[in-house]
Length: 276
Length: 351
Image (cartoon, rainbow over all chains, first blue to last red; front, side):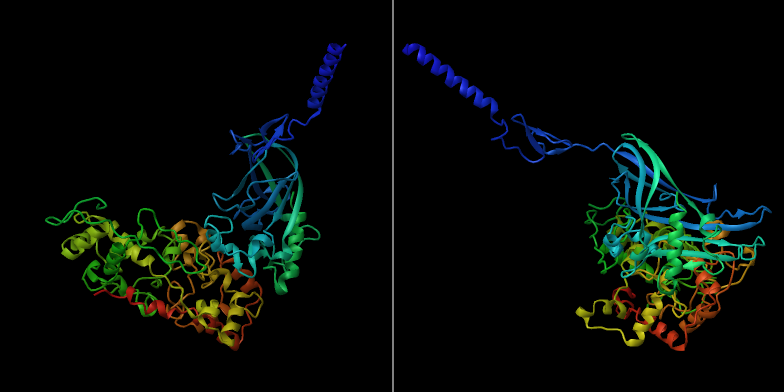
C-alpha cells in the first residue's frame, strides 16, 4: 500500500507542477530591451525594428506625394503671364505670381514627412511640392495654408538657406514680428474692359489671424516607392468675377494688416471657397 | 603642399597650403554661400585686396577698382555714372560693395551669376578699365611680388590669369561685411547701450508699415540685409513707357531677353544708403530727399511696373507721407550707415 500511495503522491506532485507551469505567464520574468516586446517568452522586435537587440530601425515604407497648384479661370487652366481672353478675344485678366506655403499636410489623418512645403508655380524647382508619406488609399487631404505659430516667428537665418522658411526665400518673410507671407498672388486686369491690362491686384497675406486649415476631398492611391500627384485647383474666376467675389475696382490689394485686414480676410475666405 | 600648378623659378617649391580664413557671420545673417572652388584664405584675401587697389589692372595704370568703389561712398562712386580710363562715361551707377557674400547675383541687371564672373567685366570693359585680361595677366606675371602672392594664394605663377585674379578679388570682397550700423547696435541695445531717437523710431515704423501714411519700403528692402535677395529685380516705376523700345536701358530684361523683365533693376540694399548716392541704376537722384519724394508722388506707370508699385502707390493714389514723415524716414535710413565698416582700414589701400 505504501508503494501505491507514494506512486499516487508522485503523480499528483508532477501533475500539479505541470499544471502550474502551464498556467504561468511565460513572459513574466522576461525583460526585453528597447523596441522589442516579449511574445510567448521570447523577445521579438516591434514592427519597424530589427537586429539582435532590435537596435536597427527598418526603413519605413513610403510613397512620394506630389502637390501641384493649378490656377484656373472657371474650368480652364491659366498660366502665368498668359492673359485670359473674353469672348471678343480681348485680355481681361492675367496672373503673374502665385505661391503657397503648405504645412502639416495629412491624407486621411496620415501625416506627411515634410512639415512645410513651398509651392511656387513660377519656380522651376518649387513648382511641385513633394513629400514622403505612408502608402495607402486615401480620400481626403488636410493642410494649412501658411504656417502656424510654431513656425511663423522663427528667424529665417535659423534654417538652412534652402529650407522653405530659410534665407533663399527671404522675400516671403516680412519681419520678426509679422512672420511669413503665407501666399503671394499677383496679377493684372482690365479696368475698362478694353483689352488693356491696366489695373493690378496683389494679395500678400500672412499673420496668425489669416492662417487657415483646409480639408478637401481628394482620392489618391499611393504605392510603396511610387509617386502620385494631387492637383489643387484655384479658381480665379470665382475669386474675382463671380457673385460674392472681390471687387477689383476697390478690393485690389491687401497685405493683411491694419486698414487692409478686412479685404485680406475676405480674400482668404474666398480663396478657400475657390479651392478644389 | 602647394595647391598645384607651377612654382616661381629658383624659389623654394614647398610653400605651405594657404591659411583658411573664417568669415565672421553677423548675428541674424544667414550662412553665406562661398563657392567650393574658391574658399576664403588669408593669402587669397591679401592678394585680392592688392588687386582691388592697384591700378595695374587698367589700360593706363591709372585706375583701380577702388577708383569707382571708394570707402567714403560705401565702396561706390559719388558720380552718377563712373568715367573710365578713356574718359568715357558708363551708363549705370557704380554699385556699393559690401555683404556680397550673401548676394545670389550681381550687377544692376543680374547678368553676372557669381561674384567671380562679375569681376571679370570692369577690367575688360572699354568704358571702364579697358584692359584685355591677357594683357592684365602679362602685367601681373612681370611683377615679382605678385608672382609670390599668386603662388601663396593659389600655387601658381606663370599660370596667372583672369580667373585666379577674379577669385582673389572675390575673396577680398566677401570679407567686406557691413553689420555694425547704429540700427544693428540698437538691436543689441542691452549690450551696446545704443538706442534710436524718437524720430528714427518713427522712421522705422514708416519703413516697415503699409498704410497710406507709411513708406512700404520693406517689400523690396526687407530682411536683415535690407534687400530681398530672392526677388531682386523690379521695376520701381522710374519711367513711364508703353513699349520697350522707349527704354534707354532694358535692365534685367536685357539679360533674360523677356519683355516682362524690361525696365527691372536690382532692388539694392539700403544699408549704407546715406553714403552710396547718387541713387537708382542711372544715378538720377542726388539725395535721399529726392528719392523719397519720387516714391511719394512720382511713380510712373508701365507694363512691367512692380505689382507693389502699381497697387500700393499708383492705384492707391500715392503716399501721404508729410514733411515730418519724410524726415523721420530719412533719419531711420541714416541709422543704417556703418561707420565702423567704411573706416575699417583692412579694406583700405594696402599701398
